Structure formats: structure tokens, C-alpha cells
Image 1 (cartoon, helix red, strand yellow):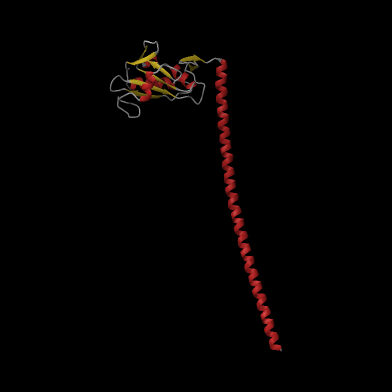
Image 2 (cartoon, one colour):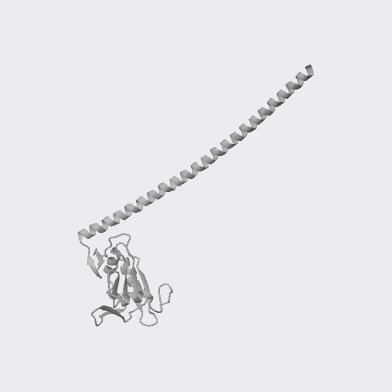
Length: 223
């Protein structure tokens, strides 16, 4: 398979290493083979808060009984990647997973990142609804289904409200800008009128002064 720096890594990334060194949980699942990754896992993570599936690890326990994973590697090629993407696309709605190959220089593994879905609830092609709870996939019962749908509707309402508010804010800003320009024009016109009035007053005073001077000159000539 041709290496791609965005989808293939020669070693294991630090975040992936932390997942492997930890335990399965609400956002992490371990699998030995890609064949074990059914669409139910994509649906469960998408209906929860998202998560990652590490393929190519063997589940075991340490001396204290704590779960751990051992890297054993898995089959990595275009065919297996397409199979994983096809299973995600078969979900309703489609789930846009991200498949990354890591540790390609040794025992390659897949890390499959499943985002939290914006269009909950999701189901498999056969209509199976699952959600990730306490490190396992759980069935969605009617009360939980109602809660998920209510949360989705509330989110859509908030998004529409914000969009409407942004539109109103934009119109108010535009109106304020136009009013500011109009006020500026009125102020300029007022200043021009005041200047013209001062000039007319000055001209009137000059004309009066000239008339008085002319009258005085005429009186002096008559005397």
C-alpha cells in the first residue's frame, strides 16, 4: 500500500499508545481483526460522544487483573480499508470514519476514529440502534431514543435561533451604518448652512456699512 503521511505512520502515535496502554471504555474499543469491527460499533460511537477502535491488538489482563492490550498486528491493505469504509457508509445516515495505519514498520495496526454524529440517532443498515455506554455497546431503549431525538431537535432549534439572531444583528448593524452615514450627511449640510448664513450675515453687514458710509459722504457734500 502506498504510504500517505496523513493516513499512515511508521510508528505508533503517542495518543494511540495511551489508548493501548489503557483499558476499553466509553471512547475506546480493542479488536484483533478488522472482520470483528461491525457497523454496530460505528453506530454506537456516533450516537455517543465518538471514539476510536484499535484493530490489531490482543486483549489480555495483567497480574492484577487489569485489562491491557498486546500489539499483534493485522492485515493492512486497500481491500480491508475499503471494507471498513463500506461498513461505515452502510449506516443510516452514513458515518464519516477516519482510518489510519500505524506501526507500519513492525506490526501494523488500524486506528479507526469515529466522530460524534450530528444527526443522531444512527442505526445499522438492518435498523439496529446502539450507543456506547461503560465500555460496551448498549441497545437504545424507547426513553433513551426519545431523549436523543429531543436533544437533536433542541440543538437544531438553537442553531436556527442563532442563525436568525445573526441575521437580525447583521441587519441592525447595516441599519446603524446607514443611519450613521445619514446623520453625517445631515451634520455636514447643517455645517454648510451655518457657514452660508455666516457669510450672508457678513455680506449684509458689509453692505450696511457701505450704505452708511455712502450716506455720510452724501451729507457732507450737501453741507
